[in-house]
Amino acid sequence: MARKRRVVPIPKPPKSAFNKNRAAGTLLLAQVVHLRHALARHVQKVARHLNRVGELLATDLDTIKTEGQVSEYAKRVTAILHPNGGKRDRK
Amino acid sequence: MPPAGLENLKHIVVLMMENRSFDHMLGALKKQDSRIDGVTDNFSNPDTNGNPVVEQPLAEFQSQLDPDPDHHFPGVDLQIFGGAPQGPGRAANMQGFIKSYFQVQQDVQHSQKIMYYFPPDKLPVLTGLATQFAVFNGWFSSIPGPTFCNRAFAHYGTSFGQVGMNIFEWKGPYLSIYERVLLAGRTAKIYYYDGPSSTMEIVNILKNQPKIFGTFDQFLKDCKKGELPDYCLVEPNYNDHDGDSGSETATDQHPDHNVQHGEFFINNVYDAIFNNEELWKSTALLIVYDEHGGIYDHVVPPNCTPDDDAFTASADKTETGAPFAFDRLGVRVPAILVSPWIPKNTVIPGPYQKNGRTFDHASIPATVMKFILRDFDPNTLSPANRQKFIASSRRERAADTFLDLLGDNQQPDDDIPTFQVR
Image (cartoon, rainbow over all chains, first blue to last red; front, side):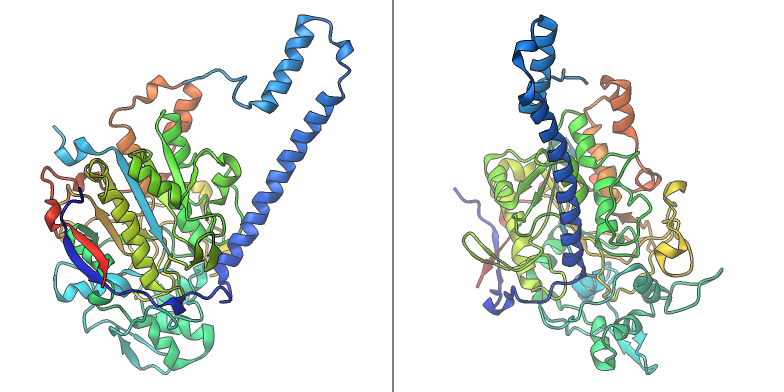
């Protein structure tokens, strides 16, 4: 049940307040620059990631013979598929 | 034994709005409560013809502060020091606001609008919350400069020496408050409005997406379900855009966005917390503005503890001909603390008043750390993580905190305002 409160009336803002064609100010233009920078950094990260994926896909599985080799391959694939999977919880 | 309000506290929520000064938004409250350090008939600024122009209650919701007033470092320096040349003994006098706004459009009459303020009845939500809960007479932006470096103080307790809007990636030594809270095994989030509005906290989006980010819809759901993090910062909508369910009007109150839409947004955040009874009893909501946006305020920003030696901004970065050691705060901004555990109509005196206190955005991480450390022992962390957890800037270490404002008695629900469209 809604709790009773003291009602204070407020006016409704006009619909004309909306104007997506308003010229963007310096803050929003700076935000766009910052976001593009963040995207560029993200792409670099993805590219490094894709390089690692490429190496793992290109691995000749017939060359994996030992448990050590299996564990090394599993560790690298798991780190990509589940980034936190290989890390122990530490406090 | 701590007061009941502090004992019950489980969540701190910060809503950071954009670019309005204290006098402009809340200064008129002085006429009904002399404890509030607001507008009088005595404060004026000279226009470029040398005529004194007093503050006037003529602020409008939109279309008045267009073009955007200057609030970059050199512009704010002019506003605070009135154009006095750099040098020892230069005194702040808050006499350069009209001069600064004149430079934007070269229009004497238009430049005087920088002195306009809102009468309280035009801002029922903000003034209603200010008079119901606690209003700070002495909350200042952290730097006399623009958005990004000021918001950085809320996120990191420092801007790492930055005074402008350039891209900067913090490379330590300090973690954001969100990362520190997570290290303590607690929860923290930044709720940005939606994808088209995105966030102004680019560095964490680089490093910690999606772990510490959610949208405003998620905030509303988390409030309803009682799943709000221990600490969160809410970002308003920064631009007008088409959303999934129609037009989304900017709510940040940045000139020239409509101030009433910002009032609605503040109300939405406040209501979402109030409507969950358990959450209401266990949450402190701080509503604060990142900086003054070039709009007049009469209080001289006080000096403060300088930031770390490594973070001095050089003269070429400040563009004023002098370096800046982060030893002076920016212009005063509106700040209100909302909690049922705050005595009704609390006014926290500012630095030039009796028992005065000074706050800035570094007070946010400083307060959150104090909150987390109530029941978290950093010695349970590994030495490396402990070091990361406790490391904080000189400014953050010196910042005042605000949890002491929560008392023993709860305001009754039937006296708590609900703001409804008439």
